[in-house]
Image (cartoon, rainbow, N blue to C red; front, top):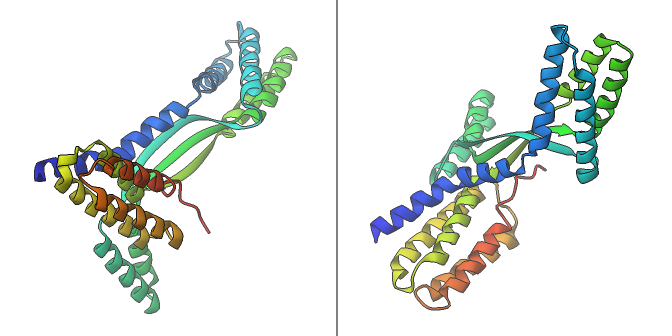
Length: 265
């Protein structure tokens, strides 16, 4: 039993980062990546004095952008994504102690100490996505082509650089304990009826992950917390029975509502 439980916990612990990375990679718009790279190549050629065939290149880029604009509208397209994990604390009791120590330090006026402790109260998957505003890209390429036709190469370079400087980095934070709990519930769905003891051990860890998320402030809605507890109890009552899988699915669906990005305010 211990071996099976350990295998499930290890698998679930690895999934928040790997699954998030795969999801984000699928969101990347490869055509926008190509256009961005091509603009960099055009700037390099202009700086070296090589302008042969550049009008055709700019026209091709403009047509590609028009197609993207028709498809996506006035939005910002993801062109690069970096996913990483920040773990300051990984169990509820440590998190509570750090939280209390931070409050004490703040009350005593030890602000640097409090800040260091507060920074430990994190257990997150962080996504940093470079996005390119389509509207800026569209207008700037039209302008760039006009400058090229006027042989105003300095303004052309400035305009193309403007496109690259318009790339923004957007940060999204996902609560890792809730992601982990979600993937553990997914594992519950796959367990056989005779693996009841393993299932109940996994449920204990789901409870711990939810508790950690509560201490770290990733989940504060009392109704959500109550709904999760209800779904967990329903699963515990049916573990090892035919209806157990259905209750595991219900728990996973409830966890899916909580595992989204962290909202400020």
